[in-house]
Amino acid sequence: MFEYFYHEILRKTIISFGTLFNNITIQKKDASDTDFSVMKIPLAYGPTQKFLARLDQNLNKSTAISLPRMSFEFTGLTYDSSRKVTTTQKIAVKDPDTKKKVDKVFTPVPYNMQFELSIMSKLNDDALQIVEQILPYFQPAFNLSVELVETIKEKRDIPIVLENITMQDDYEGDYSTRRVLLYTLRFTAKTYLFGPVTRVEPIKQATLSYYTDNAEKRDLAYRVTPRAVKDYDDSVVTNLSDDILSSATSIVVDDASSIVADTYFEIDGESIYIKKVGSGNKLTIDRARDNTIAKDHVKGSALKSITQADTDLIEFGDDFGFDGETFS
Image (cartoon, rainbow, N blue to C red):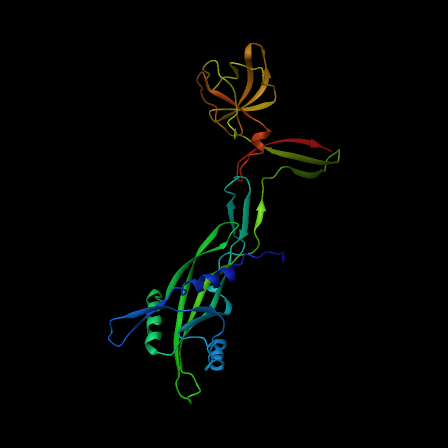
């Protein structure tokens, strides 16, 4: 607990929310209602009062900020118990490159992020154009796709819910006061927060110690080492010289010079164990190892070796076998 991690989920959600409104334009027509100009509405992150204060300070200066414009800010964060799921459940994602390593993370925690979008304008028509371009998309929610955790490529649709709209018209005042029409739209983004991502790899060795309570009391330990139960690298060593039945316990291959006893091979999905290498390329074998099924094989079927190279390629979740030793 409390190990360092930072998925930038809140930051990504804030940025994604802002991008929804960064391409809004309005049209201004002349008196004849024939010619018009298109104006893109500036959007900035920050509290509304900051921009209103700048309007008052720069009323008679050339550097005064122009209207209309929009601003948005992140105003709060609350836990959403209605979207809670089992806290002990985990999400597992296999590495797309190696297929061996797996990233795991606990199911996310649901949180609601509150936002305020402010529309500031001198003319009511400008403000209405902006509002009318926004509202039809929220009924009352608009789904925003966000990649919340980059390491596991976890992408989710975040509903952005329009909660309410208020309007304020600061029209009263003397000539030194600038009129501002202010529309405030309040939204809730239903996002998720993820904990740290852990990397899981196949177990390379396991040791079990136990105590025997009999006439000869001894402390024993059983050590097991996982091995591959199938060929991963398609390493063909030789081929069958004749057809064999599922009951056969010996086979003849084209070339047994590179085969030694106490090794494993795969023939068409069946795992076999080499007990003895005899003369004339004859092999004494144990059939149907590692929960495979003994079956007939035809002449020319490939014998693929199962070696340490295959063990190194074991995928997560593989039902591998064990070889082991007992020591005291």
